[in-house]
Image 1 (cartoon, rainbow, N blue to C red):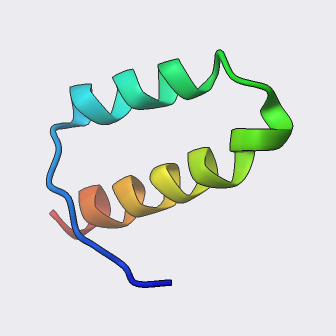
Image 2 (image 1 turned 135 degrees about the vertical axis):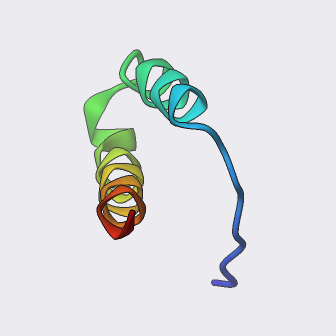
Length: 46
């Protein structure tokens, strides 16, 4: 699978995670985890 980079604000990421949270957990938990890990990695770099 090819990766792409998307630049979003923290508020936008939180909105996406909130929307994903309304979906069945089994369908979205890996994506939510990936979003959290990537956001944390970038925030910790600052």
